[in-house]
Length: 69
Image (tube, rainbow, N blue to C red; front, side):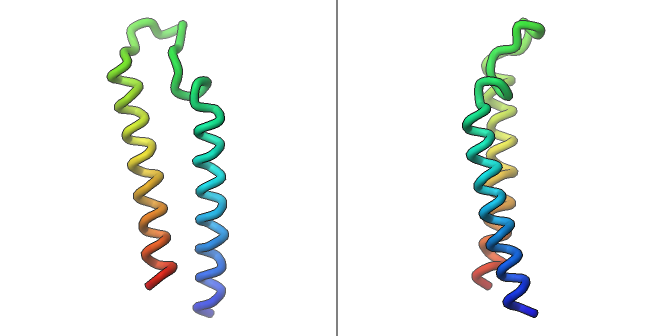
C-alpha cells in the first residue's frame, strides 16, 4: 500500500511540474499587462505572481516531504 501512495505522489509531482511549465509558457497571457484594466499596476501583478509561486512551491514541498518520509 505504501508503494502505491509513493507512486501516486511521484505522478502528482510530475503533473505539478508540468503545470509550472505551462504557467511559464503562458506567462504573458496569464500575468501580463491587461489593456482592459489600465488601473492594474506592476506591484499588483508581482503580488499575484508571488502568491501563485508560493502556493506552487508549498504544495511541491509538502508532496516531497511525504514522498521521502
